[in-house]
Image (tube, rainbow, N blue to C red):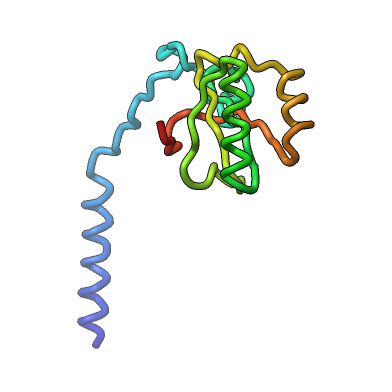
Length: 138
């Protein structure tokens, strides 16, 4: 038993000496991020990016309970020369039926017009969200 203890002790010392003789690892040089200055230097959250540039998002009108109300809203918008598309399925976390206002017609809808439409159509809501990832029907 003594011999086994001495053998383990000698092996431990040998391992310690062998480990100390290895060259220490050099720290890897890290290039500063300031050298990679580009158009997107700062990190932005998606919600901040949408607030900063709402003109890149799409305007959605809706939240109506029935498709008949949505169709009458669409006919009203056609009378105002505003092009729109029906949205199939749920619009993110919102319920009801929705219309996506086409980007070329968005400038025709201002706050006063949306306000008068919301007086005519109860529960009418407007949202500005990303255009990608929403299923629409032509």
